[in-house]
Length: 340
Ligand code: PEP
Ligand code: MN
Image (cartoon, rainbow, N blue to C red; front, side, top):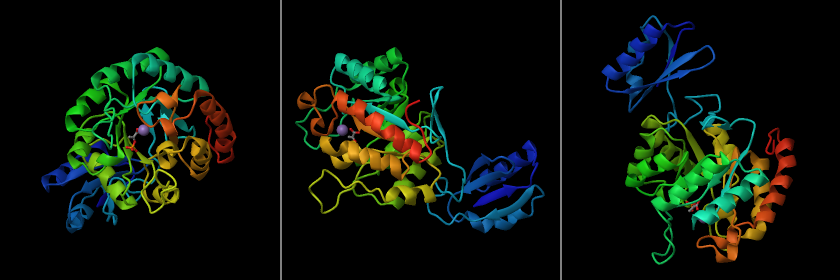
């Protein structure tokens, strides 16, 4: 339920509403709009206390949030969420941010070289996995903490924020120590303990949609993180599994307008995993921008044929540079910007 306060409500009155919510065994979430302050009362059957709040002087009205995902819904928050990463990056505002780098961090040298390449082409965030969710237990599993040190070094050297994946609750502390954004991968989207753990820390989270996750389930997973107090969440469409096997996954571009209507959270698209074929990544990246992406994830490798993970979908440095130049006018055509 949402408790909307009268215009000009005082700090004390907001606190009184929050205290009452807590006393009833619910969690209050204060949302400060331009002139209206709303306090979300989140938990099951909150509506039964409607009259308790409507009888308070400072309260204008109450309203029910119909959707099962409360804090993630547009009903709760109308304005788009803008996520600040470090000091100078805002995800969800006019500029589209590209997170690029290798699938896996393979060595210090590769990480730094690739980071330089993607920065030069206009990417603003460095990506690279240190803990890799591989289908085969015999495939390269990632360098672990050593890899995180390499990506952190690259970020420091190039003054760029970094993103990497946490696969377990234990890894969350390491990720928040070394990286600026924590990725939750497609395979872990319904690992609720992991979601709660990233919700309890402050670093922004990129939540990837699972290959068999509905839009509603994706938003409910985001709700797990939000419910723990972390509201810096980006949702990521990275392709779902369908009957089609000509491509690695099927990029669900339908999801973007639908999500934009349902949620205030920014949406990042990952055409690399979505199609899984280097030759077609660029075409899909263009479609992603056209459909309203707030950011992209693109895998780049200086020698994809030698990559330890996802070589077939990784762009060569020159391909990435050309693609960034081609994406720029498309971003402008949809009222955004990319290369500035
Ligand atoms: C990745 O980003 O390298 C990755 C493993 O992604 P996903 O979880 O979408 O498969
Ligand atoms: Mn990958």
